[in-house]
Length: 108
Image (tube, rainbow, N blue to C red; front, side, top):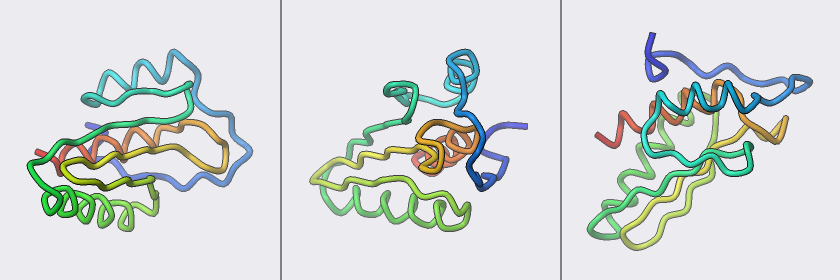
């Protein structure tokens, strides 16, 4: 099953973040996301104006609410920056990659 077809699972803490090998495996299944310090997924989406960036931010917000997993969003003229990680463990879980895949799907 593709990552984008799965659902995020809430993290209750007390689990270790993903290791480098698992991060690399999951990152190969999403497109254009940077892994920063093995703790965060980051992607910049480019647009022709502010309104298009806001439309995308609204789509990401709707996905985040539906999944119960909330990324940081930075909207500026012509750009949306999305940053995803699991706050409770200050690192990455499989759900972070699931959310990234869903964001990619809505950008298409």
